[in-house]
Length: 500
Image (cartoon, rainbow, N blue to C red; front, side):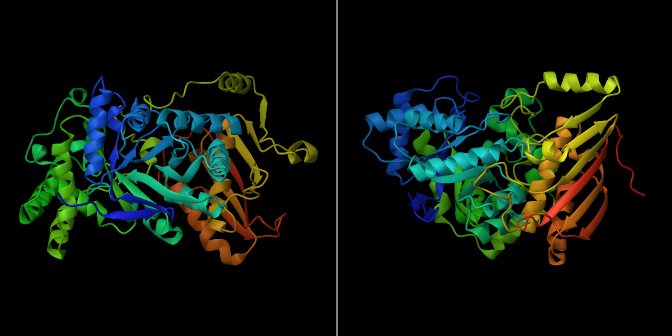
């Protein structure tokens, strides 16, 4: 078998360019995992040069199996895991430390090579507090490197510009999901030396001879979690027939090189400039050795320009998957196994939401405070709702983390994104959303920042399909570190958008 190519992430950590993903141990594939059989499969993978494994806190017994392997096998390995908290409230260091300590206990290790963080809601600044805590734990030696997962280009850039050392971003990337290269993510990663760990490269098994010229499965409930999830990706990319056109192109290229379709699909992703490694799933069973041989064949081929043209011609029939990388976990269409977020987080109405609705029905004005010390001192609130109207005070990218100062650092674009997230949080607290905004007033410190501020403003509202009325002026802002300040007005209850 060919040896896997190798690369370095975070400046110091060497890994193979093929990582074994353990999502299939989360419960949607096999109901029971034999630990000793899993250890044998892991030893086989490690002997083949595939010593890196990727998992998460919610991947069933995955972390425990890694810890068991550490106890009974002499084979060395590298383990990546994720922390995917629901957020919403607990911003304490204690919570983050407990999560990392639990992972270390389960993994039976003293340091996590790469701890990857997933944020469910960018309007909840708990995620920024948590990444700050992970950075503290990195400095303490419990984490070697911090990564992200399913993070769009704008928020990755925001965190980097805020000073956080991000080594990787794990996102979906395949011959049908090209968001990482067709959007801004590839550019941001290149500028900041952040590597992409690509998952979904084989679409859960759809990119194989098994599905070539095969009819579309009609009952999604008969499929395992992987196939359910990636059938939704296929539908979002245009449907079964465009997918089959790409699959036939991959088959044509595979026959030229005397390998399988999966090898070509993996090689395609590995050849993308900012992709450090592709994550290939495994159930860690006795059948693993057969799959390892097939997977490693991706390192035996070089795609010619003719091969790449064959694939790109077939891709012309595809639609772009909506949004940016990771949006499938934050807004419709939810490209998950369940088609929503029910397997991940609950979003039940709160008692505060009921209280607000009662106050509205009684004609009260509702004032929302962000917790800033200046609001009671100066006699203003962050946002105010009267009836179906919400007005948001002038907002800057002020950080609630004492030693961080300003979100977005010296980047006007990132500061604008942070401001709009804060505005969205205020709107949400009063029963609204950013898409309800009908007017913004933007004040910038420097005229040369107007374009960058405009691009961030346009991206945020473009994701929602709305364009509010806007005014932009150059003004002397209070606080030299703040480059932009934004006011907003929203009207709730509007039905749709008519563009004339």
